[in-house]
Image (cartoon, rainbow over all chains, first blue to last red; front, top):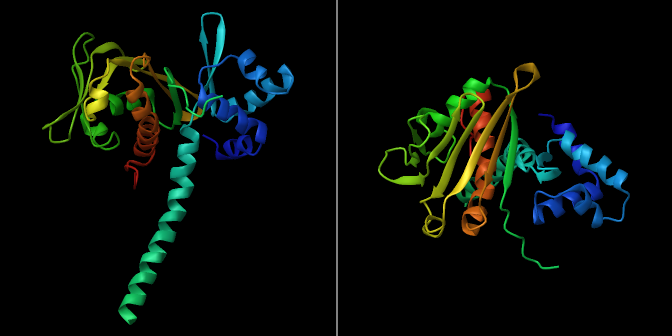
Length: 105
Length: 153
């Protein structure tokens, strides 16, 4: 819903690392994630909260455990909103250049 | 540590859409909508749990998805099983399960969550749908918010 939050959440190496860990294996508990980072439980929680607020991590309860899932959709939306837009122009500029060069040849 | 990524036996996708839960529900369950964002496929369901949940090519000549409708709680929760027939490898795997949850939010938004699970015995399906759901949900959001399908894909 808010691109700023996604960009801010991604602008941190620890948070990107957390997303990579979830990409490798999804649906993990805080304890599991904490065990792979040299960081306090509180620090990991803080980063996970930023990721959750950006919609990049979604938590679900499973019995007594709270599991963290990677949600890649906000990144896809940024791709569709920003990357496609600019690469399309770039590609069409190259296509125009090709047409111009071939016509003048 | 291995370089292989483990099979994700539960996949979760979530998106906020500026639309009512009812509008989202209709976009998921009516073929006139799904053909515009779900890889051109036409959903086919009676809305009665226990009956088939199918997806077809737009001209209905080929079945792409097979499953059974498990739960139909408009406009909150929809669950069906899933076997992708469009790929010969995934067609051989057992049925997995797809759950759609829609929750109203402030400001005219709804939160849509798709959980694709029971993929333990279906690694090819798990791999196949991972990028697909992102494309589908992005397209669904664009269609409902702008009235137009995604320009490219």
